[in-house]
Image (tube, rainbow over all chains, first blue to last red; front, side, top):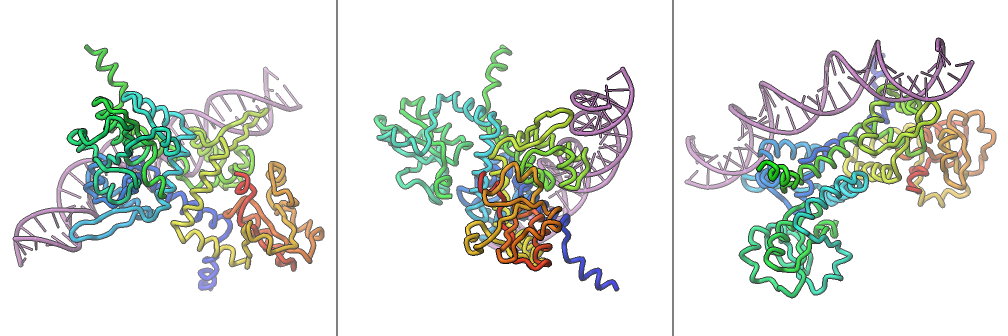
Length: 219
Length: 219
DNA sequence: CAAATATTCAATTGAACACTTAAATTATTT
DNA sequence: AAATAATTTAAGTGTTCAATTGAATATTTG
């Protein structure tokens, strides 16, 4: 009576149940267990991007970026929107950024090297890092979002003005020397704000960078 | 002037900085991106275990369990305590369980299949699942911790009594028929409470299982 | 010190992964 | 309907990973 065997085989035993559950979760975690894919998630939190933009920003080939995006899509971490003859990639929902943020902070807790690398990198520029809750101390300050304009348009701190780091040098004359210039970008591992600091400090401004990104507050 | 090149080579460039950071984090995530290792983390949250216990509980060979534990140790998620002629493994700190809990809950959000599998498995026993904040509704109830005794000793809900599922049948006469018997074990993916429910319901008790584990409240 | 126990290590195998290159697909413009 | 642009897919290659096995290395106990 083969039909009976088939019928009952749909009921999982304890061991199969656990294996299925843990495999499902591990597959999702696996989708995040790659440096490029983590960087892509961090990037997409700032708004939709094309494959080309993602490839350029993360310094990998377009084909490679496409494959990583397919991985992320399969794990339901990224969604695709078709527009004319190109596609825009974005995070499936706000929880994807939230889990990356959680992982990132957990990693900093577990792996002291990470903070050491971050500190070493910033020490070269004598960069001061300010956390959102210390921002008051730097009053009067001017908050400058140094990300590309599209990302600024996609969402930014109310009080911030946008000067993409690529346009900073030509806009230095607009900035006040008597206020603290607080730069911010995509978060703790983004280097735009550091590049901006280098320019600002070398030009005689009082400047510091914000640790957090705009997405860290909203998501 | 070779010494200069060497001297400056210790300073990371932007690209190397990002690669190092994201690789460090990805390596840590990779250590969690395996079904057995996730199950081991879930298990160790209930207290120290020997390799043999871990191997038995997760239904893998001792040598295999040992290797997974070395992986987890290398990623600093698990620590080892030497005792006489055996070793006891435990989570490095409470944050390791916290991140697993976060991942687990994120996965349930992202992958609807997981809840479906859990529901399907439980429906076979007509098991009622109660969340901690709904517990009041089941008063008067008796909270029964059905995990092995060592895990109970390691920490449990104040009001709970301990009847390991292996000893439940011989202890049925101790249980009240007029109260709701609420069983709990190691959390949402543990099947001890379900096994207990099957016995209890077949024996005419009013019974349900708690979704959460004790560790979910403390950590 | 030898036997027993617990655990790791090392070697192997097959599977999965990341990356590159080139070809294929899809939609859009001419 | 052909040409173009954006992106994916497929094939190939080198690398890493999981699982298995049996041997090796402690550590304790008799």
